[in-house]
Length: 263
Ligand SMILES: Nc1ncnc2c1ncn2[C@@H]1O[C@H](COP(=O)(O)OP(=O)(O)OP(=O)(O)O)[C@@H](O)[C@H]1O
Image 1 (cartoon, protein in one colour):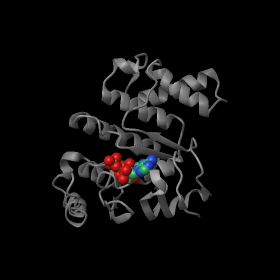
Image 2: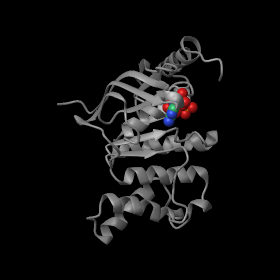
Image 3: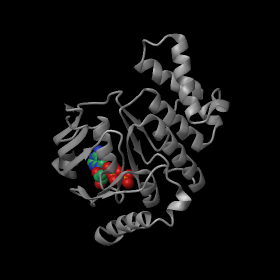
Image 4: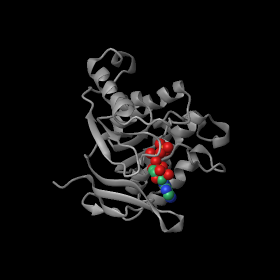
């Protein structure tokens, strides 16, 4: 069997005014397995979003290759759905209609009834039945992110890409969304790539944590395997030696080996 998702010697160089250039990422090699949940962690500006955008096909790598199911990624596609920090819902459509629009676009062959069933399946998956006819302006930030997740999953992507999905939320809402994501993941078994700044979030959610070095020329510094069984319980984990070990490994990478003074 071939590789699922692989990044091979990936560089990203941005042209700067005056003919100069900025090498944001250099020689990134990474293999991601099917159904794996990984997080990418690193200091601000190390190229996490750049990496995610290249996997999404929203931006292209300048060297190397990114392959999904042995096919090189050359642009966006419905098999890769992205959830951004700021939900990006259409304000003039209801929760239901926001999801419906995505499903319609990717699965035009569905009958009216199938379409309705599919939309409601994902509305329910994030427990938003009661809010399905509300507009984004009428619901909380956490609920909006839940709609964003439901919308992303409703098109049946093979890979779910999340760029600091909970970054703008308060810590209780954030915990709530992490729980949602873990429960949903048990059901849908997607491959998920999450960018985060949060060490606890990375350990709680991931099978592996990819730690990036600082830019310019940022690359994969270390990869940590999180050997914690699922389902995971955030309270019980605090006492788990494996949890403590993982946390310490990331903290040491970020604040000792690759400390950055301007944060
Ligand atoms: N279009 C661009 N032109 C020039 N430089 C860019 C461009 N986009 C990003 N960069 C630079 O590339 C580097 C990586 O940016 P990126 O947004 O990927 O970092 P990040 O790790 O996601 O940061 P943060 O955690 O703050 O979101 C940064 O130094 C940034 O200034």
